[in-house]
Length: 408
Image 1 (tube, rainbow, N blue to C red):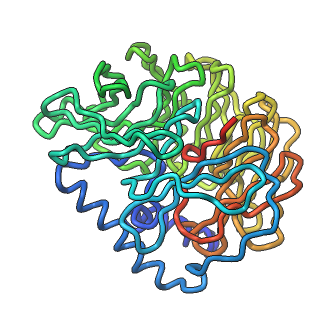
Image 2: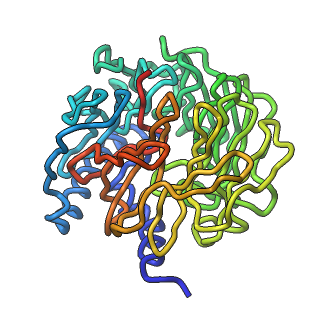
């Protein structure tokens, strides 16, 4: 029997029109065509305002704490109720009050690996879907030119510090759909990484060495939704050596707007939260470790309702969220599956997911909520479970594990 809390969360995830309106995915918008892209951006804010009005208590900012245990500065994006766009914030180490990096961004901003720049969805002067790039302090905002007369490249995920990978499409030629990378200096240097055919390839993350790119592809023919069961693939940065990573019969998906896969710091392995059968319909998931060439797949750690995996920069830990007693909590384990321990408490009726590691592997930032997984706050915690700290104080839609940047 499916518990009531499970059913509500599952139905929320399946209702992508509502969920996407409240929390824009931590990925570039896909399949936006011309002026329809602008209309969708405006619709996001309108829908969020109407739905969040039903939660007056949640829409009231809470009082900031007196001191912050954050050891590094972070940047993050927030979709504020009533707004048409996203605001990017910076919170300095040991501080409690964030500063605005840039307002009016068209989607969640993704930090480059060196956390010197941010990338987001952008529109050209003719309202074609492209990407916008700007500096970590909000300066230098510019929309990348499109290197092809008909190809559109909405947003993008970083491939190294100088290239973006986007889910490209051509309104005049469906055979050109797939992932493409290009330079952030001028928008040129186009390289096709994949041919998605009648499906949709969803960018996830480049390997830390910038040589490979991990992405999801729907398991079924003709499927284009990111919430459908997905297979994980990896491809070389030059578009060669396309390899499936998920074992046969296992699927993953984007859950709560967050990616369920991560790279090891040495770029030799990937960790993927996956299930036997459809991911969102199956509440028994595992973390799989697989070599970057697709060989030697092994299941590690517990079986449970596991929704993500995040490898620490020092390589010692994999953080993951797992539902216990009706709520998600963060857990840690070693890459061989040993040393499993719960990190966040399960005593306050809140769920915690989508952890992002600090550069020294001593802290994590994660999403936390009470009754509605689409209305969240950012929190932080030390790797030993101490000093859990509320980072934000206005429930809204926040960027999660791929959209939070820790400065060195």
